[in-house]
Amino acid sequence: MRLQSLVGVAAITVSVAACAEDTGTKETLGTLGGAALGGLAGAQIGSGSGQLAAVAAGTLIGALIGSEVGKSLDKADQMYAEQTAQQSLEYGQSGAAGEWSNPDSGHSGTVTPQPAYQTAEGTYCREYQTTVTVGGQTESAYGTACRQPDGSWRVVQ
Image (cartoon, rainbow, N blue to C red; front, side, top):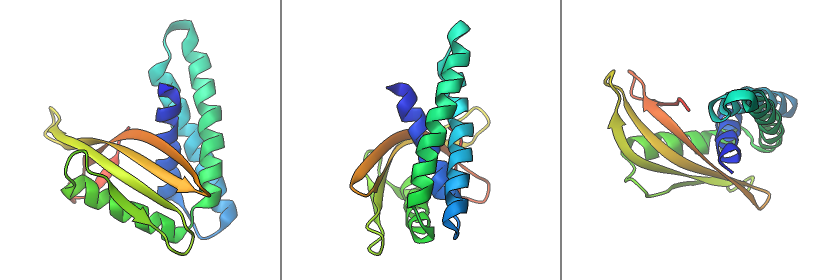
């Protein structure tokens, strides 16, 4: 179950951030990004002799989810999701969901930030939960984002 959550956030995040105007490009970027982040998630979850299997499974699952989300989200969805994520991470109350919805596509989602914390290097980070609803099906995932020097938030995990 934890693997699905990590792979889901990787695929959703990469797919939303990588949406392009061309549907084929969105699907390709979603697939590649989902595969890469899914493999990374598998490497962090697996241990010992099972780590290779976890990486392989994470890569496959991430590619499949990333492909589907990448096919479905358009540039406007990306804009709504990105604006909501930035606002929620910067100003959102912990546990309160920021919501986005594209009235043209019918796609929607949420970003629910958790309390901010400071790393040893002095960077502020927040864990968050995100959802994306496409065609009536909702995918949920968890991740961590950190504030960049320019004030924007970047997903780090």
